[in-house]
Image 1 (spheres, rainbow, N blue to C red):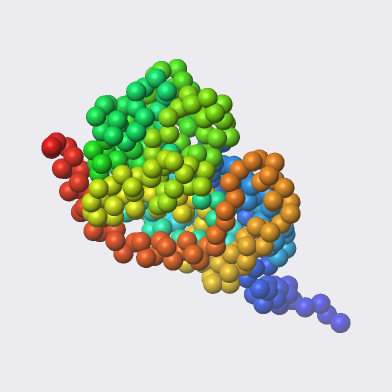
Image 2: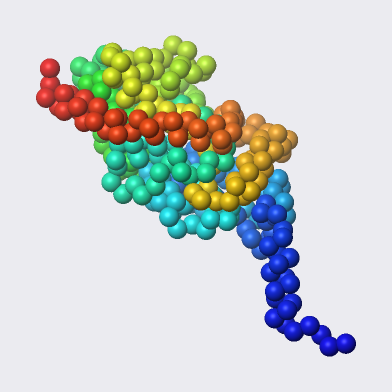
Length: 340
């Protein structure tokens, strides 16, 4: 019996492959999680955490690798995911929770719409805080309105830069941003050396890496950037509480909404529904994985997950207000620069 023509075999294999479910990843179809920062820090930590565990919960148990793609406060990586990365479920991203904010305020270089990304799920929310060194004389928001304070920061697009700038525009604080530090650790070192008087950093990082500073009150925690006070910081006011008018509260709420986005995984737009559902299902299953929970306990990091579709809905609803936000922010910034 004559063997089938190679072309027939190719067509048969193609048809067979097409009949496979969209979530059937294989070792040959590895997944990459792109991290919008350098090594170290929260995005890197959580991105690598997910890369170690999610593959076991996907059909075919694909290899999952983490790759750092720093630049412009996660904008470089997100532009890649949105515009260049393959749309087959093999490219995922994790980056700054302020990506929606950067889009909302019309940041130069942003070529993505966060509501059109496919959000897979969040491992933990993030509480950022602005702190001052104990010798700075700045202990409260009211102090920061009356005295100039040097704040160490990373890139202009980083939330650790954007958040104190928002307070300057909206609440008329006098933070002077000194950007260009390599990472959050570098800003803390600069504060300890006396190069700057404060920094904005995640509470999780501060309590884990500088627990003695907190315990010995070497830093004053001035404000937390959340919609409600964190259970860990019940006596620290939120930026929203410091807002004095409904207009200020609306603008500040957009700035601090990144806390709800937190350390979240997303995929490119225009993925097939089957791929999105498979990734979300795998992510949800991963969150109950005993190996993941042991890893989180060992690392002593925050864990308060939420679903990808919940984040998706938040961002879709929030995007409706972006044009009005730009106008209000411009007006508030102009008022702050003109003085009393």
